[in-house]
Image (tube, rainbow, N blue to C red):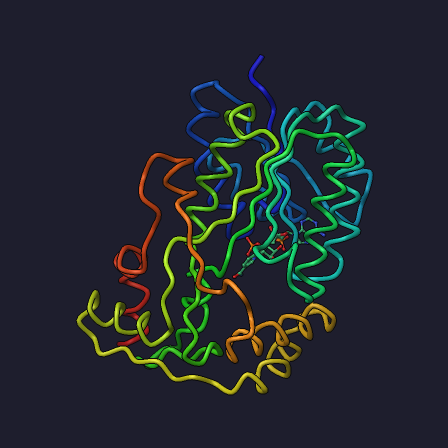
Length: 295
Ligand SMILES: NC(=O)c1ccc[n+]([C@@H]2O[C@H](COP(=O)([O-])OP(=O)(O)OC[C@H]3O[C@@H](n4cnc5c(N)ncnc54)[C@H](OP(=O)(O)O)[C@@H]3O)[C@@H](O)[C@H]2O)c1
């Protein structure tokens, strides 16, 4: 029987990319991919990929237990909230009871070193995965390239961000998903592995220059005052403890106070066998999004 893999966060950025990647292996009968989602409408959309879907709400332990039943492998992704601690424990306890053997966890780079709660919580989740005795692959990505797509504004060629002049290490979430896919398809090859994920270090002004070169439109960068970030995050509805720590971390990054902020590695290439996505590739792949913004 093909191993059953439960994908949590399947409606999210990384989980969604992972599900699309695993759909092929599912159709070929190599695995059974099961996408967990709390919304019926979103489950319907995920089912169109041809994978199995299941109701899964982290706030409803019974739904989590039902979703994880029979799974041998698990992808664990949680959202941008302190609730990630309770959500992770709920899923991991159910996974242990269900006999899950391998967990691929979406964490964050810096979780072992930096004094910011939202990062340290990921370290606690990793230690809990280890304490429960799972085989594991810990993913520790740096900054998502997609964060830049989220701030493009209609009618504007100015990319506004909070990193000042700092060089930042970037990763395409599709590359994170590709590494997760490799670990879920062949857990033995990625057993008890911790993967830092960052492909290219660029300052935001160079990101804007790359987007300009790829689109032929003079995109520029405007550095925003990090002091403005917290009110923006709170207004967007982000949970306050998470928002406060994220804003502190980005403020420190802007002031050059985060060691290793620009550190990159070859993990994507080593694990997937293909080169990781650089900004020039990412801008080309999302060229339409930038062109629409500029129009
Ligand atoms: N952005 C970055 O630059 C960056 C860098 C490093 C690490 N990270 C880490 O990446 C992780 C987030 O990844 P992402 O951007 O892919 O996340 P995302 O797009 O925000 O997705 C979060 C997922 O969690 C699901 N979820 C939330 N609450 C749920 C609940 N009660 N029951 C079931 N599902 C629930 C969401 O489902 P719904 O669709 O139902 O809401 C969604 O599928 C965070 O842990 C963060 O620390 C981010």
